[in-house]
Structure formats: structure tokens, C-alpha cells
Image (cartoon, one colour):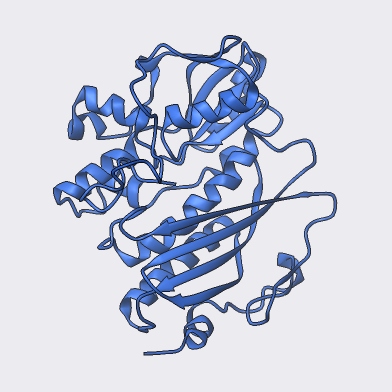
Length: 329
């Protein structure tokens, strides 16, 4: 057993990053001191991942560490922000310095390194396993992608493919443990679309990450923009292996309602669509048109039944599989 201070020192105190990373004072004091780039706006978001709600308690520790950071970075991607820093609050049942902790830290730091994100502080405390991650990024003034800019006539499009998060959860609940399976990889090891968000600056009129389900997140954009949408459900790009795992009908339901995909849903003026597709293709990512923005509020083209997407406080809570349908954000 170790104190929380020993765990922080051993696993979460990197070499001093210095001013080249915008850090005047990093881990180890009451606060971190940051130096944002002159003329940039600071984009900040926080997410909490709770065992048995957002991820299975038996998930690999490295995947839990990666996933906790990835879901927060996805919000920066949706804003078109460049990731800079993060803070982590880790709640553990016991301060046991063993293989689990080392693997958790490995997964977390690997994604930090891959995305240029510097861990600059946090906290470790005792309780049921939960990870809170605050991310901070930068975006030039007037270039932030928000939920409120969609206009009638804009094309609705998504990056990558949909339904993989829900499909991976379904396979996990069936007993699948091969982390190389494409659906399980998408569920436990999601990739925040930071490069896509940067590429879409100046092209997309609105954006959101698909965390709670396509229809639920589209609803947020439509509400923020005061518009409606007409979808073409047969155009939805389905994740690799999804139809084989769930069947055609359930695969399309997963793409519409499942969540945990962490792709970007964007509204793009038609004049910018070809450029947007080209920029994303250069980064190895597809951008698929799935509908249009219209004047009349509401969503047309799909059957809407009951609540759309995951809601934390809806009656019933998480199912026995240890996570909500398609996950939660």
C-alpha cells in the first residue's frame, strides 16, 4: 500500500515539461501555472468515467486509462481545438501500487504522448473506481466549432463509422475478450478525432462529438442552431463487423442510438464539402454525408421512439452488463 502522494510521484509526475509546453509550474504544487499561446482562446472540458457505468470494471487497465482521457479529448476535437493540457482526478478503492496501476498509467500517458497533451496536475483519493479528466486546448478566435452554427441547406456528415461503441459493448457482454476485435477496440480504445477537428476549422458551420448517440447529439446541434434535419439512414457508415455481430436492423439502431463512437457530427455548407472531404482523406478518415439541415425543427427520415441516446438519470440505470446501452458520456 502506498500513499496518494507516492502514487502521484511515481506514476503521474512527468519530467518538467517547461515553457515550450506552456507550463510554468506543473505537477506537485497547489495549482499548475500555464501560459496559453498569445491570441488563442482556451477551450476547457471535463468528463468523469465511472466503473460499471462508463466502462466494465473488468476492462484492461491500460484501456481504462486510455478511454478516460480519450472521451475528454473528443470534446476538444468537436470544438476544433488543439489539445494542450489535462488534469486527472483518480478515485481508487485502495492505493495499491501493483500491475493494474502501472497499466492504467501506461494507457493514459500513451494517449497523452500521441496527442501532444501534457498532464499538469490532479488528485488521487479513496472510493469506488472513477476517473475525472479535465482537458484544455487552444483555438483561434472566431474559429471554434460550436453547436450553434448550423444553417438550412448545410450538409450533415460524420467522420469515420458509427455503431462501433455499442457493438463493442454488446460483444463484451457476450463474453468477447479479444481486444483486437474491431468492435471491442472501438469501444475500449476510442480515438478522439483531434486532427479532423483541426482540419474542419473554417469549413464546418457546427460540430459535436457522437458520445450519447447520433440522434441525441444531433438533437443538441439542432436545438443550439434553431433548425431541423432530414436524415438518410441508409447512408449511415457502419463500423467494421457491426452487421455480422448484431444483424442489419440492430446494427442500424446501434448507429443511430448507441453512442460511445466519438466520431464528429458536422454541418458543412455545400460549397465546403469537397474541401472538407479532401482534408480528412489526407488524414486517412472518411467524411460521409448523412442528411441535410432544414428550416423546420425536428428530425425527419427516421422513426423516433422514446428517448434518444443515453441519459444518466433516466429510470432503470445501467443494465447488468456493467455499462449503459452503448455506453455513456
